[in-house]
Amino acid sequence: MAFFGTSKDKEQPMAKQVSASTPNQVNIIAVGTVFEGTLKADSDVSVSGRIIGKLEVTGRAVVAPEGAVEGEITASNANIAGTVQGDLIIGERLLLGSSARVEGTIKTGRLIVEEGATFNGECQMGQTGQIRKKAGAVLKDPVPASRPNVPHDDQLDTKGANNAKTAPAEQLSPKF
Image 1: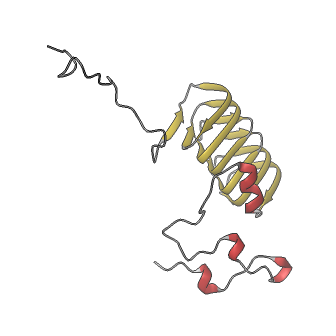
Image 2: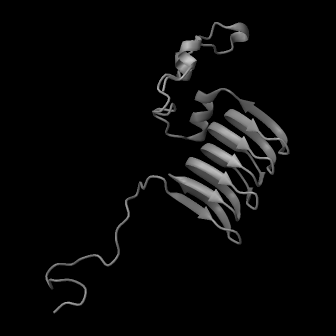
Image 3: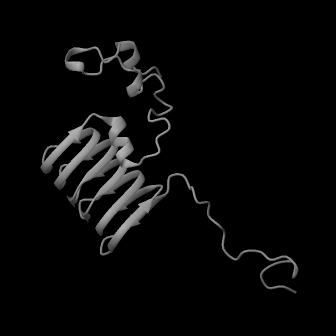
């Protein structure tokens, strides 16, 4: 008689194996936790503690109001509500919440700054193709499936005023 299985000949794992690419997974650096070094993740990372070093995220990097990062953050998207001292290289969208405190260089496709956020440094934005490459993001299709009619950067007409990227209104309006 076997204690953990029905057969002596068959070995069964004691713990369930988790797939390497679990969707909607969030890695958490909790309050009171200090991580030193380079943290790499294929899914989202939420920082309520402190990171000293580099944070490289294929998904979204979130720094909570009580969180702090002293070093570089590289991610596809980021929401910052805490403190960052270092460079931010964000492939698509960076949101600085009202409690954000950022010192360093920002390179991002789009920047949203809420009232109350402070930022001291340099900012480069809008050159999404170059920034995505620098961010190392693997973005095969940056337009969500729910908005298929929104043009990619390479589909926009660049003959507008000041060489700004423009597109006909029907291309920009999502059809739901």
